Length: 308
Ligand code: UDP
Image (cartoon, rainbow, N blue to C red; front, side, top):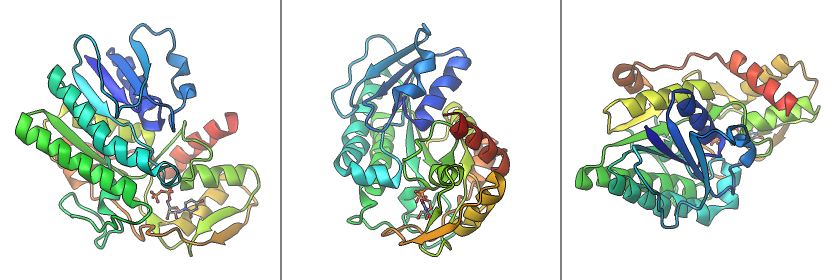
């Protein structure tokens, strides 16, 4: 297959490039590099099955030849990034998704949208199932990402229903691993690097808010299974081992044997109080569930940050 990955130089996008190249496919990565990094794909330079195009996906897309599958992963994705680039985040989720779907239509390609657990906002039910409609503050600081992704899902379903494009929607929950940016503001790179540098771990609020963390290889496997399936409805992909952020900070201090202390900082506006995926649909329809234990995934990620 010939696969286009928008956001191909980003954290998840670059792992997808590696995965599909290993499986013998041809990959085109497209990225405007505002949050993606050339370093993430530098090892692929010279690979004749790989091609990189530096482009903003919100602009008109032109590609010669066939494309079989489009993975639309372009978007700032950490709360810090999408608050730094609010307009770009709204544009890539709306205009960028429109362009990517238009290209899928033109090329008769299948299409997979990277959506997010943020479509559930600050959820009033826990765990979140795909049929939960969410609780999003559209004008809050996180609204730029949440609403862009909600619009992207709506547009994807419209192209599926109206233009008969064969589409998939992955609702991706917190994911971590090598190639996250040290300063992207997310809790895992933040805590790991604070612990390694002997700095205090910055816990926001009282740390009682919950998350669960999926290792990148599990996520990529889930995305692959979703792509290969015929499921057009949204599917949650994530780990379900829920813990509070304070518990997570303590766990990380143990794993890194760091002597860092914990420093409480104000809770950001609209920070979801709970989050945990119900992955029954992924289990039933894709035969997928996460395998990598938090400790194991963290050790690999810590090792990567140490050597970079
Ligand atoms: N968080 C924290 N300290 C940090 C970064 C994040 O306590 O230095 C908290 C944040 O408030 C949130 C959770 O960790 O409750 C996960 O944040 P992240 O930015 O990783 O992603 P989110 O799940 O909010 O999209």
